[in-house]
Length: 164
Image (cartoon, rainbow, N blue to C red; front, side, top):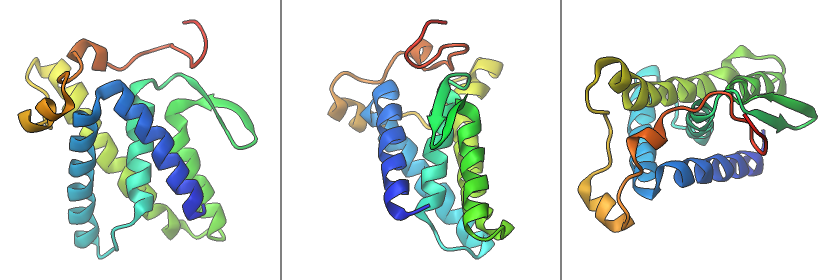
């Protein structure tokens, strides 16, 4: 994908996350992603790429409402949770079927999944506090504080622009 498409997707899905979770949670998410991606890319001998960051944002946004229908390019509607994986396939095809082109996107999906799991899934399973909560400085800067945790629970069966 071109850099313009990646920038558009980062903006579109980043704004979606920010509107759902608030600016403080989005800033914390992006900081965690940059740190995780930098550490993992260094360990794997890969450069830090915007492609990985874009994939992590798209994955995190897709986990918030996984069954919503979403249009991508010429496909009428696919489940939102499949979008990050469809983009991996597009990256591989654009690289003349070179599977190495999938590594940055898969790295982003992995770090996005890690964040989603420890922030939303694990606290629901263990009854504990979520990891990676926003610092109080960011919450105060945001003004209204963080969104209620019940509002952050993944939604099931809701369609974008439609009824359940």
